[in-house]
Image (tube, rainbow, N blue to C red; front, top):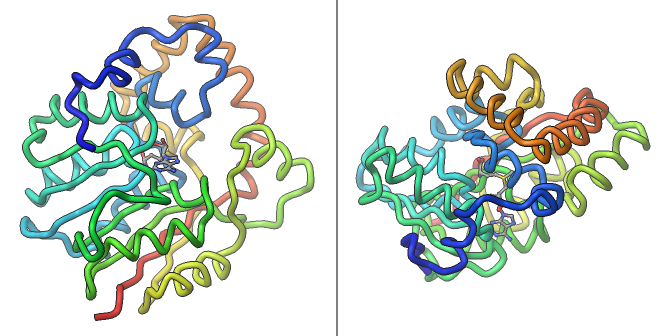
Length: 271
Ligand SMILES: C[S@@+](CC[C@H](N)C(=O)[O-])C[C@H]1O[C@@H](n2cnc3c(N)ncnc32)[C@H](O)[C@@H]1O
């Protein structure tokens, strides 16, 4: 269902969140609240890799599932002039996605929808290119990947970015990341992701991997730039609830970072 900003739930989320709501946010919604635009493990580099493989033109029908604040959807609309449907399950993300599409003056190309990757409200074969950056691993991965393939037309492309373990993690690092920082998140090795995408019927699979640098100073500044980076730090400093959240998050992330990497997986739905 398209979101137009008059939606009651989305409208409520535009109000300032209470401290207890900030404390309860998952790390990704928190990143959105403090104004971060790039919220997936490979940062802008993995998005570039993904777009390079997607072969988008102004005639391509693109679906961005778990769009977050619509950074990639906006980039696709601006760069290629393509129609993009940006769908997410989170009201916080949808509100910011809509605002970002409007601020970038591409609201006529980017449709923001509420939806669930496990049960997308689109017909079979409806899109030429389907993108999911750091979404599938939050749910039943095999089922979600099949759903991405279902809404892709024969000959169309499915492209995803996810976490994988670059090094076998210590038991403590695994528990901190999957048990405390991102409860319920599921991922494993490159081979595991390839198997899931093959299981969804995708062929010609290509992968690319790299380190997880989103939360390092280099990755943060590379993704957000100096001015936005300063703005994000200012928003963190402006509220004790934000500072407390960061103080909880950062040391835990630091324990898992050495073992984490990003993978880009791209496949084609057979014709
Ligand atoms: C790590 S963030 C990635 C956001 C965005 N793709 C990006 O790269 O910036 C994960 C996103 O997936 C969304 N999400 C989680 N579960 C979902 C589901 N079942 N269906 C749709 N979106 C979901 C979250 O709300 C969040 O926006």
